[in-house]
Image (cartoon, rainbow, N blue to C red):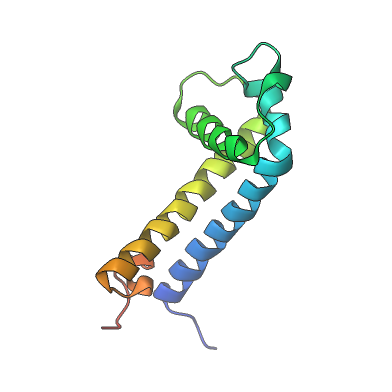
Length: 122
């Protein structure tokens, strides 16, 4: 039986989580943010929030990071689980984005960065 090495498992796991985060972020920016606004908006009437996907992108980050790292949790259970998942996948997404940028500018192997230096390649 051929067992994959640790580097392959780590790289594919991080890339899968980041890809899932990207798809989740697209869904939230275009459709899901309306549901999150209902529970987490700063406005008394959540329908006053902007319809722009770019504003939804900002609110998605703010809602998920604030909810994950704040002491006071105000969202129902299903929104709370979604926000934890969003925060976890956003961290992986931005890690891959940063690793790609560093690999490009410093001419380092991207796989070596994503696998946290476990790669045997030069």
